[in-house]
Image (cartoon, rainbow, N blue to C red; front, side, top):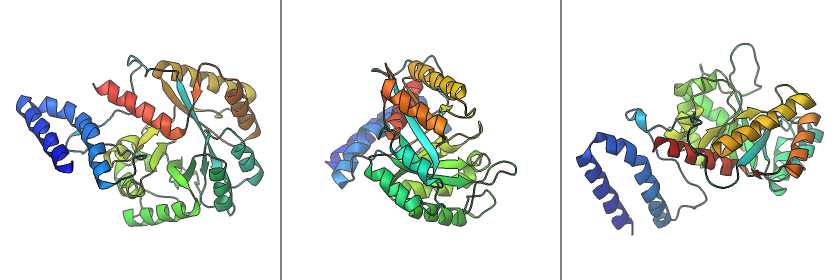
Length: 304
């Protein structure tokens, strides 16, 4: 089976080369998506993890765009929405309140609070996706907390700090950045981090704390599933402010087929998310991984 798939891949690839370079640039991601699952099945790789095609600096036109134009048709089916509550672990009462939210709400835990390991286990037992909320260097005087990844640190040191953070959050299925407006805009600093995350076979969700973020392109270039948030629910942490962002989230989901929001474990946000999840109509609340894959599929659609 492996030899047949391998031979078929190269037959199609050589044919594309005969047609022209543009065909190669357009077709390689699709070929990878067609043939890689066969290789994985032959090798016994767990099928719940689907690695992105490895894209290189030498072929920049193959990189998936982070921003997707509004004129690309949304995916079929009801619009899907994922919600992430992060900054968890430090406040035990509010963290446990977040754990009582619907299980499809993803929960991201800071690695350094004392109670994070126990609370992350509780969240996983309750059925939530658990994320490592990874501290990264921000622009200016913002302090992301101890053991933050930094642009001036050697790659090996950033990987060591990453490993420490991962060890503090049991049962994690993904990672997202805490702060990181400076670090996430530096592709060279991100590269060794994404290589290690690829080895752990988990996704990286970009909290998108800067418009200059390179997270999605660097993650996908290293075979890591990745997408970014569409809405911050509580930049204005009032009832009217959070309600307005939920409406914006719905509008983006309608336009694009999928949208992702981040919120924090304050009373207003937790109340609003619980109410929305119980009363929303015309949308499907999905896991974060599902929404990342839906947004990735739409990015692939935009390239065709």
